[in-house]
Length: 498
Image: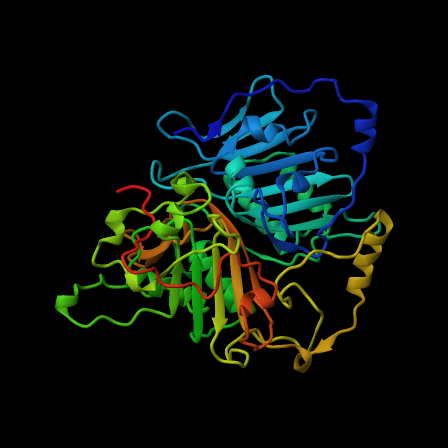
């Protein structure tokens, strides 16, 4: 199955008017403080984002984009014709090969990342690095580069803009951890061009998110296990929130696989900030004894009735994947499934969320110790919101200085972390998050991952108020109705194939 749709058009024409070239010379960053937003869907007004608004065709100077599926005919109408566009995508190991390719008569450099377990696994990450005069934009998304994911189904993005390092400033040759994570991910894809080198030119000191990536492979040893997948999630939770098993998880996904109680416990340990290195024994049949209770978590996925009655009927379910055979296995934990009903009536959801809330009110006791005084930083947010101030070229530089000079505040003045959320490309599958097994080589634990994935993590320092939707009230743009309901009687999950 090819994931590039359509034909390639010639580029580099000189038909741009003088007015267009002048207009392309400048624009201002909108998301210096970062924002998590839902995507636009045709027929619904609101604070949603369109792909055109992110790309800003008339001002874009350089771009890297990646996704599982790419509709080039459609995408190229939203991109300038006179700059190099680098696109990484999934590829079919039966017909294509790993590598970097120049598409003839176009401005496209095409990248096929390594797929060491092909045909198992896929390149599923969605990332955009967009460069403008004086600043760059990072977008981490759940949607592919196809019209369906930006006009019909709901998706989620995190976006943040970063100014260029001023002549008087210096990063001392060291990349900010957020930028370093991006660089490592791009290098692993197989790209070693100007895009990688550009990262050192920008100021990432206000980066809001912690990146959580998955890269295919078998990772052995504690340190390697914590680099990717749910091992990386565990490390981030440990660093930001500490260890705390008093947590309730709600996982919204557009794809489900063969879930087992063992995998749920494994993921739950990582989400609690506890090393997931315990290798589970196979789940026994009910007739063979009492099983341990499932962890406090639910799985949010649409029912057959929800998809069939949606605005675009069953055709809209093409982006939702779950096999009936997996659901019918005795090991599948049916009791945790909840219906995914959009707040936008009749629309189906392609986003991926993990919502976590601690059931104790106080800060987890084993959390990483903070210094006696802390600056307001990227971990002390209540979700993300738009940068509401209007920034001019002069003002967004001065804001950087202003942030650095803010007075410090004591720990006693900081609300405790009461939860966190993840959003990005990870569906709730072991291929995406990885699964712990025993290495044949070392006889020790290893985390095996099949997919490329990318998402962002935020802690939530919200109120304890339980009135309404706690996550929405604390700045998380949850697209579905909460609390999610059980399926109606005689309803089943939406099955993409039998």
